[in-house]
Amino acid sequence: MPPKPDIVGIGVCTVDHLVTVPRMPKRNENMAAVNYDRQPGGLASIALIAAARLGARAKIIARIGDDDTGSFISAALREEGVDVSRLLVEPGSASHISVILVHEATGDRSIITRPPTGQPVAPGEFKREDITAARALFVDTLSDATLQAARWAKEAGMKVLLDPALPYAEIKPLLEYVDVPIVPEYWARALMPDAPPAAVAERLRDEGAEIAVVTLGERGAVAAWAGGTEAFPAFPVDVVDTTGAGDAYHGAFLYALLQGWDLPRMARFASAVGALNCRAMGGRRALPTRSEVDHFMADQLR
Image (cartoon, rainbow, N blue to C red; front, side, top):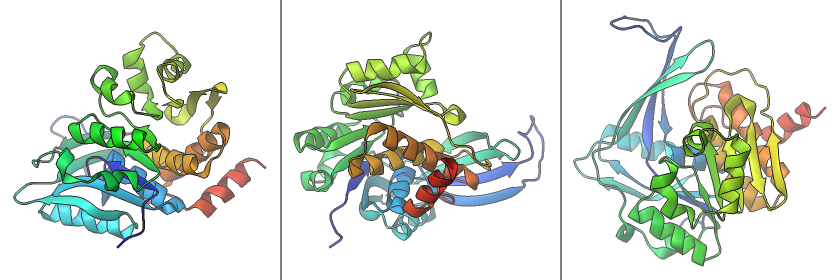
């Protein structure tokens, strides 16, 4: 029996087909790729892999198909030390695939997805103990399963972190159970178009979040918590690909949250992990270990 996890996550698993291109192709253009790679992807997958690389024990609850893509997902997560005992396989279904075009010069990307054909995870397919044995829960969308898991986590005194894949109006019922919403800038702009990111973070805090963060890509992040509101700059790195940088930030923040650090230390640590993940192609190739992050941050502060 695997040891109890520190973090459990519920979400969609994908396989990312990453294609580096010299520029984004025009209509009907035949272009030679600079590079190609295949890696596991998905918000929950990369966040949990990031936390596992840092030293946390992570477990995923998700569904895959019984195709080659599903087998690749399962093997890749297991290789990273993520507990896949609740990775459900649906016979006859196709797993989620994403094709990601990465601009060679900037690391910017465009994403095309083929959604999975299987059913979403249902509440009856995992037990209360699958959630409450952990210390923190990661969720990315509203479903019967994530709502049940978040309720159980809240009742057990766990920390619940959200990376929203849906807009505010759709995911609002889940926010009641979320301690730490970490939202991207485009989500914040959709919620409050004329407000600065800090105002969105403060609104989420005032609505009940213990900590609310708006990530701003290369401009860093802004966080609101009981101690106030503060902006945290991004760490400079040579960017190869920005795929998974936000997911890495979430995984690192989860890890930092479980260490009991103060907010500024958590935010800087997560920013460092997100930046370091941009050094290589794909969402997981450059995910750092704890010692790599510590050395990187020490060098930055000299």
